[in-house]
Length: 464
Image 1 (spheres, rainbow, N blue to C red):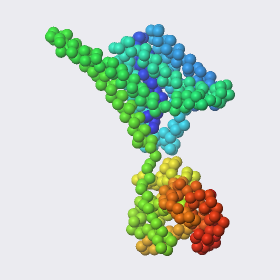
Image 2 (image 1 turned 60 degrees about the vertical axis):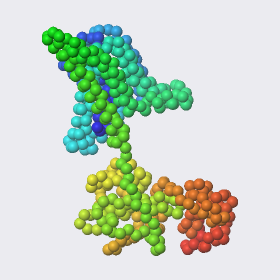
Image 3 (image 1 turned 180 degrees about the vertical axis):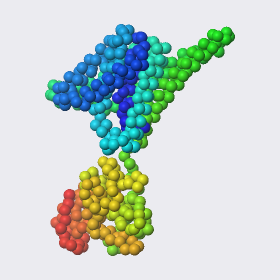
Image 4 (image 1 turned 180 degrees about the horizontal axis):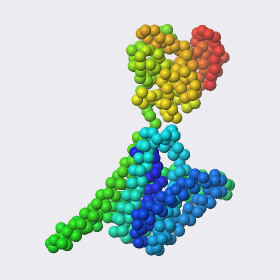
C-alpha cells in the first residue's frame, strides 16, 4: 500500500461515501451518466487546484465557497431530482480533486520523464484506490438504502468530516490576513482539524463498520426468514434476498479491511524512515588509534561503527569496500553536511541517505560533495587492518548530536557525576573535563596544571 493509494483514499473516500448516500432518495443514474460527470468534474477540480492563484484572498474565497457548497449539499438532500444529484456528483468530485492535487508529493509519481517501473506501480495503486472508492460508495449506499433511518446521521457525520479541515484552513487564512487575532485556542483548533488526514481513512472505515453493524440484525432476520419458509418458490426468493444482502455486507467489509490495512501499513511501516543498523562500538588502542580487521569490512556491505569522544559525543563512522574485485575502502562519517547526522543505510546494493532518500554512488563514497557522507582524513590500512587515528575521529565530533551517558570525575574535588548532569565542562590539552560546580570550573580554568599534568600540544582550552 504505497503513498498514492493511501492519500487518494484520505481525500476521496469521505466524498465517495457522500456520493453513495446522495442517490438514496433519487432515481438511480446510469453508469454512463456517472462516468461522464465524475471524470470531467475531477479534471476540472484538478486544473483549478493547479492553476488557482496563490493569493490568500482567493484561497479564502475558495474555502468559503466550498463550505457553503457542503451546506447546500445537505439542503439538496430534501429533493429527489436526478439532475440535482448529478450536479452534486460532479461538484463533489471536483472539490476532492482540487484538494488532492495540492499535495506537493504528487510529483513523485515518477522520477523521470519516461514510463518506468515506479510510474506503473504508482498508477496501479491509484487504479486500485479508485476501485475501492467506487466499491465503498456504492455498497454503503446499498446498505443504507435498507436502513433509511441511518441516512441523515451518516450524511451529517461525513459532511462534518469535510467541513472541519476546511474551517481550519479558513481560520488559518483569516489569521494570516490579520482579520482575526492569533490566540492559543484558535491555533490549537487549527492544528487539530487540519493535521488529521490519516484519521479520515480510519473515520470513514468506522462509518462503514457502523453501517455494517446496523445491517447485521437485518441480515440475520433474512437468514431466519428463508429457514422458516416451506414453499419452494418463496424459499428460493428468500434465499436469493439473503445471499444478495450477505454479498453486499461481505464486499463492504472487504473494502473496509483494505482501507484500514492500507492506512495501518502506511502509518506503521511504509512511512517510517529506514532504521540504522546497530553500530559496533570501538575504542582507542594504546597507540591512540582505532584498529579494525580488514576481514570484517571487505565484503562490500556497509559497516557502521561508533566511537565515544571524551565528552560523551557518539561519533558514528562507516566503512565500505567500494569495489567487488579489489580492496578500495571508503571511510566516512555517518553524517552529511547537507542533511545532518540521520545517517545512511544500505538497501540492496545501494547506499541511501536517510534524511532525503538520495541514492549514493558507492564508488564515490569517500569523496566530498553533494549528499555524500563526510570523508574521514588521515586513515590508512595495510594487508590486515584499517587504522583511524584519534585526531581523525575528533574532527567529526561537531557533526553529531547524540550524547551518551558516561561516568566522569571532577578533577578539582574528585566528586563523581555523569557528563549529562555536569553543568560545566572545559577542554584542555585535547581532553574534556567536567565539574560539579561553577567554583571548581573557575579554579580549573585559572590554573589547570594544578589538577592535571600539562598536556602535550599546549594548554589552550575552551569551556562552558
